[in-house]
Image (tube, rainbow, N blue to C red):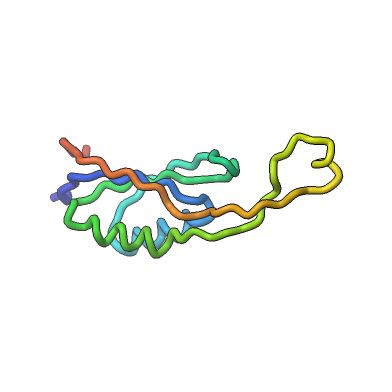
Length: 112
């Protein structure tokens, strides 16, 4: 008999964090569908994870996402369109990593 799925979590994470995160989620017994994408201010590779679960397991999932998807600061080239930009690349500090989560209640779940 299939487990009761009454929530769907969409988690958008940094592409470089995806592989290890999915491996850890699978070890914790979560099943994940990964959709690769690209975008954001830095135009970096990201992944959207679709995770169906029973709401009783939500705290465990959130703990895992918090521990694996830490933010960090790094220097990136500024996107300037001025004559001075071609002579010298200006670097700015930006926060990357982390996760964006959306949690939806599932009205109906069927596994065919």
